[in-house]
Image (cartoon, rainbow, N blue to C red):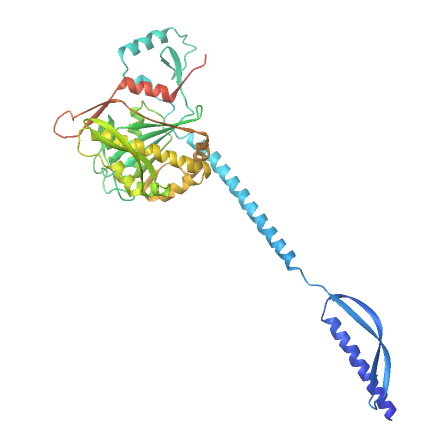
Length: 423
């Protein structure tokens, strides 16, 4: 009877050892190796026994954290490359669309120089030389100038930049005459043939045809007035800009204009601070002459004061225009350098002063221009209409009038906007 109990005890001990091995096997995924080993144990009566037991050695495998991170980094890299590709494609699409719309957005096909009141000598030369050209060879829009034949360069892009005499952000005016005067007006000209960027300054008091409206927005008539007033006859938004653009285009014999950007003067400080300041000369107006001093670097607030102040001296508008020319020259140079490094700067600058700006140049067109500007050289000579400032004709209003020289304007048009015809 005791032998049977001993045998049961022995089997139970062996069984528990075997169960422990099975339990271990089910809880670990592994590769294993096995070998036999002799074990000694004692029964209930203290007798020693030996038994051969198969031991299983398992080799556990752990997932590599290093491998996991490599996979994560790979996925991140693929995502970044995909985003870059999308950005490049989007930029190219915007660039292409901008180029297409800009070249089709001009106000007219070409200037009409037949409107020019040139000198009698020039008229006689044109009449005599055109008569010698065979009619079948002569093309509409061709112009004979200094013995050569020229045509308008339709690839040129021209933009009207205006500084409006308002400090606050842009908003629609309460009446039809609340647009604000355009105290600063410049034509920015991009010539893809010469790869030059040129600027023409327009005196605010330049006398030209201006459409006049009443407070209710009703058209009154077209009068010979200071060109700065054209923007005032409107709502201060797109309507005012379009009317100002029309007057400038008319002044330059229906010159095609591809777009406009107007800036309330209050936004100048934001733009200047965004480019890190501008360096301009100190200018004084003494004895009816401009005197240039040392250069000075201006912050946004200082630049705002620099281009706004003009004093009460005679022909102070010309004095202020000279300062505005120097400011614009410095600002364009600074912006160009930044845009060459990062074309998105152009859009960022518009966002900085966005609340002060009205423009019909859209994001696609800005993208295209930003990509082009690096290949253009900026002509530091800012051109201006030549003429003479006189008091108002009636002698009572006190408003100065700038009467431009027709021959000088004609020469300017030929030198900047026209190219010689190859025959």
